[in-house]
Image (cartoon, rainbow, N blue to C red):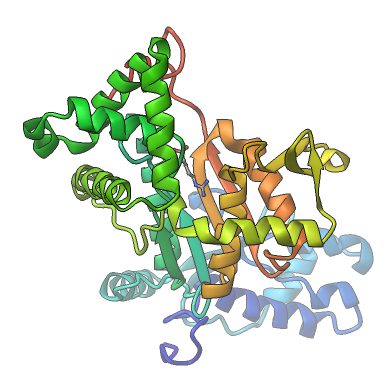
Length: 401
Ligand code: ARG
């Protein structure tokens, strides 16, 4: 058995497949020293059919032409007179020239015991010394998680655990939606309609309820809408009362999210919402402009990606506000600088495919994502109701809890 400390990338025990391949490779090379193709023959694969043994090698077939011999004769020459590795119970040549190998049962049970005893189940630690950032679940504040969030959460957690098992340093980041124009509406709703008992019981749900009420009122009450806008501006300008309310909304929402994560057995290393990157957004747009990548268009600032067939990515709106893509570019920049990940993988539903392609492209052009960092989007199908997709505002959401 290999010493586990040999190298971080090595297996605690060698793969039997590799051991058999090494042995057969040497046999092919020794038997046909003048044939260059024989030097690379000998790859052992798991048997297609367990009746024929545990492993097989089909390479005699491919050498028939070069060696001008029937494949069966080639296989026979390779194995005749050879001392079998100790793990082999039986070796047979079958059909046109397959080499079939059955393992020694004692070896198999010994190996099974070693796998069972190894806390890592002999999984190769190919991720040792490497970092991956995973962005999953990422629900929006002041809305309860709905059944659509189960997929991002569970698929993300599965990818997370696979990487951890391979020895990667994983940074699972819950990129919650904690910034946006909805907060003016929520502040008004909270002040006028919030029920403390319900807030204590199901905070995100109660925040959503008051959001919907306030949103509906704003639809046909101009003065209410104006007040919502004013509250938003105050929040954006750092008004201490509105900042405190906004922070409270985040805290309350996380209480409800955490309850769901605890039930699912999901945990995050970081919960850095969109707001975490707000101070970096103007700088990102400035860099895009300085690099000649962003330009003004109808009062907004855009990155034209039509040459890549990706349309136009708006990085600053006409009203001066930044948007989702700008935040995501700043987020990549921050993650790359802080963690130097080999990859950053996002898990969301299918609707965001264009968004990810766009900002990945912008990140590459701007150089915030170096070539050494792969950016990946894992997407999944959307859950739909017979009457269409869910909408918080329409109130037809099925809550995850
Ligand atoms: N909050 C977003 C949503 O609910 C998902 C965020 C995904 N992550 C990201 N970095 N864009 O749709």
